Image (cartoon, rainbow over all chains, first blue to last red; front, side):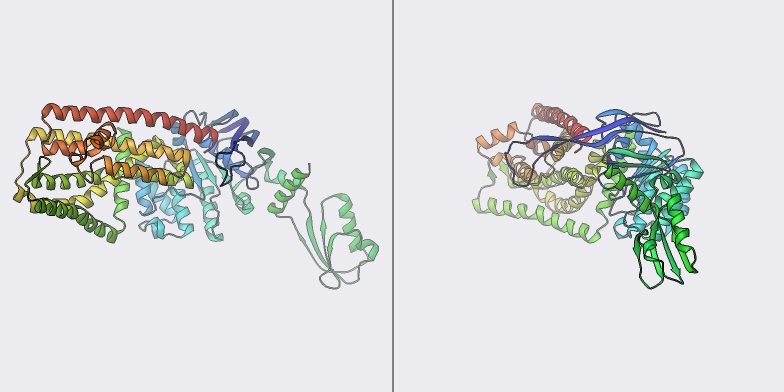
Length: 322
Length: 269
């Protein structure tokens, strides 16, 4: 559905263009926002596209929308080259830029939806059917007749989603749709995306900084940083690859001998008898754990798996070190 | 056809958007009433003080018609979608205009058309009221031929101003902040379009400058046709001038548009 081969985007920025640099010689400086990225997304996949700020996620998305022309490499969305067929491509993608709005500020969302109905040539009966369905899925009823400016951020985003999928695009591209949303709204958005995917096989590319979004919605993640692809695979593979530590909290009857204590990584002792330390999933460290527990009585024990967020941070950290 | 539907729905949405602030709409009607009345009083006072019935070949009656028509036309061409483009450029919302199945410029022009209709309605009500009061006193008639020519010229004038507005909007792609540039443009517009003071009061040299600039083509020429100042061939030459500016301004904005799109899509804004 989406295919990239050595996709590259090189910006030319004007260097040293401060507010008072009138008439100074301007050097143009090259900036590689996306650097030879390749991946293939099959129809119906739900992909988490992740990476820190400035990694090149938005640049990739803009290229998929046809707003940006790649410097080199190939990119097709559902068989079309977006920048060559921007208007045709527009019919097959739905887009949300989480920080910007595509709804008319002073009008109820229904006005914006009717406008998009005409733009995407949706017949009246089909429009009504879809509108009722979206009302149901996103609970638009409670605010459908109020001007967008009076809506809460969460309500507005539900309206944005309705606007983005009204023409039932095979590809839905979301650039930080959950930014600034509360937990309930986030959950509703995730459910909606999953429903959309299972009902219509919509291919979804989701960019977010909330790893819970990725965990709950996506089976596969593509991670980029500084324009380069770092990881592409299932979330499971990401977990295994990242090898970040679990956090072990254990309360013991007797104190751990100092020589053994010295071998525990990141040790904290908030109370006498309570030990908190980090543990990786290697054989060696697992042996260490049994040594700690040997000849002692465990009063309480708790192992926290690393969150996806920690794993991603760990992965990115390793990428920096490499 | 499908493009026209999108265009009119866009215009309708922009038109409807104008009505959301009802107090603003009501005050808008009042503001226009003042804006049309003040020049009427000023010209009446000037004619009265001079003791002449005809100044520069124009009677007070013609002057009043001029004010009514030119103010109504001003409303029609007052859509400021160049600043909308500028605003979207600055905030990045412009990207949404580029991911639609219709051309971005059609969206801009459609919204401008809706805004114009809204402004026309605001002005139309007070203008109609004043006309109903004044015209019977002045006594005025318009032949069907002139009416037809006037409407044609008015439509062409609208096209001139729209293309000019597009051209202004294109500058936003380059300078992002074009407030001062627009301010200057508006100044020229007011001075040289004959919106404020009819061009027949200008000295020859200023009239010569106005004649070679596009501003007067937007709505001074329609007003001249309405007032019957021009004979029939003169009317057609006015239409020709308007067509000329439409072509010239269109070519200019087309060149700038292509460069703008290149800048946005290839250089990245």
